Length: 249
Image (tube, rainbow, N blue to C red; front, side, top):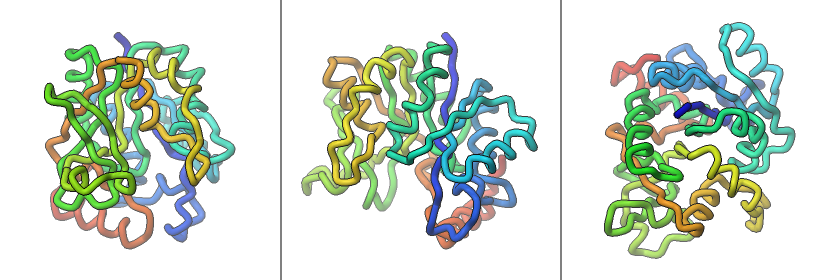
């Protein structure tokens, strides 16, 4: 079965104080997007679609300058992660198989995690598999709530979590494997009935669960898989972590 990838790279990153898309901010001198693409290639996934938005011409230049063999689609309005994936529906329809959806500003999602989570996704026959991690401080992250058999029961956002759920330290990394056809079957059913008026990709997971599909969660060995950056201080922290732990792409 084919495997492909969608990278969400439309973020403006206003707090980055940069005139480039957030995903082009550098970690050890290389754009965060390069780290994600490199991990995909090392995991054997070369069929890639990049969802661009803010300063889309910068992403086009990046693709041209690096010689990256990737498609790109434009998200004219940034209306959430679910909406970003909706922009790539034609890509999904033409591929089939399984698709991994990753944030372009999460540079420490490793090739091993991508490959191992795909193996679990396929072996369990899951409609979706959320890539998770156990962290020391889960504040702000969506919590992974598992059923007794270890499958996923729910992703509960921090603001919606009761005191017992807040004790869970397994969190959503924002990376997902989906069966492409099953993802397409629920994408248009995602609603924007929330305070931000946005379409969120975790709602696709909930819809699949509601449809009675099997959904799993794969726990990354390295909790750094969840890390991203929204401002210069967080970007510098990523650089410090990469230097201290000898990460490279």
